[in-house]
Amino acid sequence: MKYQNLKKYFIVPFVFFATGFAQAFDYIQLEKLIKENKLKTISDTIEKLPLSYKSKYVLIFKSRSLHGSSFENPRVLLYGEDASFILSFNGSPEQKGYLGLETMEYDQSTSEFKYREILFPNEKESQSPSSVVRFSDDNPEKCLKCHGQTPRPIWDTHPLWPGVYGENYLTDLSFAERSGLNKFLAIQGSHPRYKHLRNINIFTEKNTFKPDVAARYTNFMKDSPVVELSKYLAKYNIQKIVGQMKRSPEFEKFQFLYLASLSQDCGSFESFLPDGVRPTVVKDLELFSVDTFVKNKKQDLLKKGRALTVNQNLFANQILQNKALDQFRFIVEQSLNISTDFWTMALEADTYDYTQPDSVELALEKELIHQIGKSDEKLKNLVSLRAVGSTVKYCEYLRKNISPNLAQGLKKGSGLSTAQSLQKIYSEEKIRTVAEADPVPGLLNLCASCHQGVVGPALPFLDKDRMSTLLNQGNYPRGTLLQEILYRLSPKAGPNQMPRGLNLSESQIQVLEDYFQNLSEKK
Ligand code: HEC
Ligand code: HEC
Image 1 (cartoon, rainbow, N blue to C red):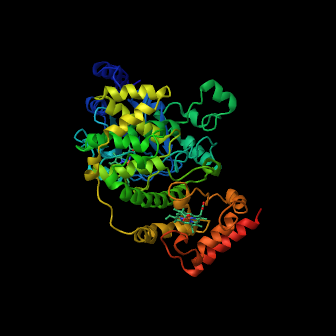
Image 2 (cartoon, rainbow, N blue to C red; image 1 turned 60 degrees about the vertical axis):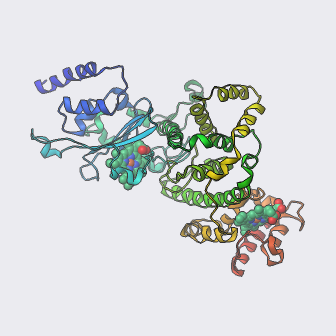
Image 3 (cartoon, rainbow, N blue to C red; image 1 turned 90 degrees about the vertical axis):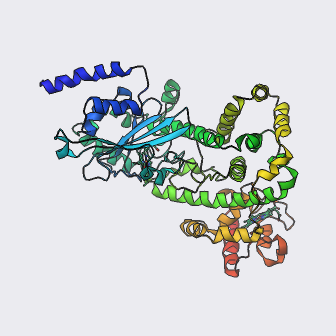
């Protein structure tokens, strides 16, 4: 062994003792590690990372980031024990971003994400003693362009992470993923960067992505790396959202209204609204929900389009709309003047898919209660009571603390009529893209946008199977659901014509009539 190599082995443990082994690895320590060891390459840096980083990671074969990626040379995200600090690199000098080590750090104390880039000299320069490693500022504009001005992780949402090995939740690797992975495995052992990765066999083990029954019992449903990372990021993202809200000077004034918007057991949200603004808020909220639906539908289609394969079963019962979340986002935007367009982890900004394995509104509510409870003992006590089934006092407390004066703090409505607003939502390019990309008539999305149970009566317009059954049933003023729909589509229905607030052309009406007629004859 050459002296040079020997030195490495001695220095590593020494550095860790000097900087405190017990402390979790973070950005400051990474910077120290690089400077003290005079590291000049990403491969040497990876080699010296703590074992937890070298053994916990995801592999991205089609990244939409500043790092190029491929099946053979995937982008790697090392996320360590709890993903509060993440490092990322790729594998080929031909790829974009090859010399940049990207990092993300979640700061628990400020509820903020910090993005930074460490630029290494190229192969030739790195031999020269005068070459330097450059450390970016915190959150340079270069990163905020995609991660947002109040940066958030971009990681897509449960149950599909296009471009990552193990794209589909609880689904075995597809043929394409498997053959891609084999290309990577073929070079991994001798690759200057990838060779430092440990625990690589987790990607080939039978139970990693789709654990069988026995594995579920013994491992308590151990998550695949993709899922594990997602859960951590989703958790931090919720904390970030509430942290961002809390920094606003208006937060305290409205805090109980936010809780009311998320609560599942305190009666309708409308009943919490100050009298003066109730009618405007209810109307604007309807339109807000329609807008949300349209954008989420677009995101859903684009996201599925990015994946190699889509396990459709995972989406069978997915609802693209969530009343509590719509209410919550609406009232936050109205009261704090904060845009929620960059709140989710979806790649497509300006969309509102918060899906995670467990309820997002409960997670948000819990975090809000945790934060508000820090200075409100009473609330904390009432929440404990609520947990054992006594909700009345909790709800009363919210109600009591929502003052009628709040009305003044809410933004005034857009002033547009419902029809004008709908025209605006539907005429935007978004809805056209949606309509064209969708296998069912795009117009159905309009119906669905109000009929997922948020604005109009719940009707499963996008679920063909259920619709074809329901169409022949019902006890509507005009008879079966089919008859009611045909009536509602026709000008005969007058002010009750559907889609509410919009005038379809004759040919558009014809398309829908034919569609429903055909669907009803299927059963
Ligand atoms: C062109 C858009 C874009 C820019 C600009 C961008 N990123 Fe990202 N970033 C992404 C995407 C997309 C992902 C999701 C994973 C993937 O596809 O690689 C991501 C994910 C990440 C992650 C993994 C944690 C997370 O947020 O999900 C880190 C770390 C990261 N980026 C760091 C950076 C840094 C540092 C910069 C600035 C130097 C930066 N990014 C700039 C698009 C971008
Ligand atoms: C902007 C929101 C909105 C859109 C878009 C919309 N609806 Fe409605 N729809 C409603 C509301 C609200 C009601 C309940 C009030 C009423 O009966 O008129 C309703 C009622 C109905 C009913 C009667 C259901 C019942 O239980 O009585 C049918 C059928 C219907 N809509 C069909 C459609 C069809 C088909 C489309 C698409 C072409 C559509 N709707 C688009 C808001 C909407």
